Image (cartoon, rainbow, N blue to C red; front, side, top):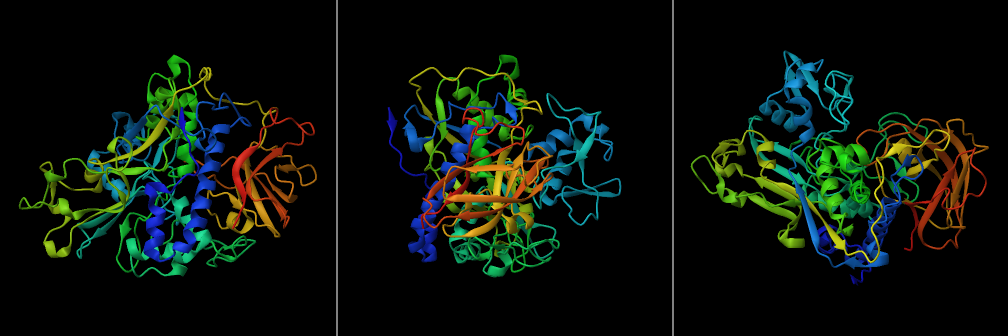
Length: 580
């Protein structure tokens, strides 16, 4: 038996609270419709997998869509992990790190903790950074080959994921406020909230997003601070100009705006952590990973989290999160079909033993830990559904975070706090009424001759050149004509505008390809971008086009005309015709 299910709801059921606080209850219905469409699309994408460029990566029949099948009643599995970025530990602290051509020695845990706080470290007089778009300092390098294990003596590459706090890639990010001296930590803001929530809200009304920033980050935030802007001159705009979204007629949202950027907050000026920003820290990627993990693999290739993630090629190896999530989900899928529990989200769990957090004179400081968004104890198996929290010691207390202890140990870095926390998600299990999917060999690439383009992002051309990382489905507004860019993997690089073929499931959509890009931008939800192609097209949507999700597919020039759905599957979740 399954429980009927009508609509995906917002993480921690936060949307009704937000719109009530904002006094915008009239916009809640539109948000809830759009949010359901987002999660439904990501769910379908995850079930489809990647049959275009990979072998043994699809279908994922043991991940189910509750909108069509209802939720299972075989119990929930809560999966949790430590939010400190494990890849910093794995790549920089073992004895073998002495092979690192920059460091020539392993880093200490204190050095790694400091690196996580600031994104930079000085070793033997040389400053290294994890992210530096200005190019003023070298990027810290890590081994390039990591499967089936780290090759310490091979090639080294720049650390990824990139971004102003890209290294915080365990679905938890933070921003630190320092005291007047600038040397001691006074407050820290934690978030595990996905950026798509704010991107969705922004498309309906940017003022709602502004209101949340002013409530939870800083009352000094202004609407124009949140605009996505061109970083260089582009065909659609000049450096510094707002990136306009033609489907809404307004500037697009910048997920790494100055109030949600980096690990340092200066009240009234910049910084903060309202939602996640690291490329892999997206909800769509998490759903995709969970579905990929349901496929059973050969025993020798799935004996532990690291071997399984190398075999199945989902997520990023050596994180605390992805290998562990996939391994637990894989074990559950050996007996049940699974789907992430509604409300689908990633959640902070309450720190352990808050009573053991003490001030310099033994003061109880547990009251300075505050849940600001989400709730405690409301999730499956009494888990927490916390989206945002702060540990804030007021200056009036007369001491700072660095003067406090946890279990008798001084707090030197935010990692000391993060290691007391967990991040969690949950999956709802369904007892199968037929045999589970047969195991598959490890994922491998299709041969170049049989590869088909895999659609991965679809955005208005302005957002493409504005480098928006949005993973929302493109809005195809009835009665409009706009220029869009479809990003794919695996397109024949000899494609031209004359032999390009793009098909849409909705007959009310007509597209004309105006340019083919043999090299296009990175993909949201991936740690390492690149290897993508792009189709620029003029897209006309009939005024009578039926609302709903739009599927699409891209055919290479050498493919036969009108292939069957089985020979060339359709992708879901990248476009939607709105109903409001």
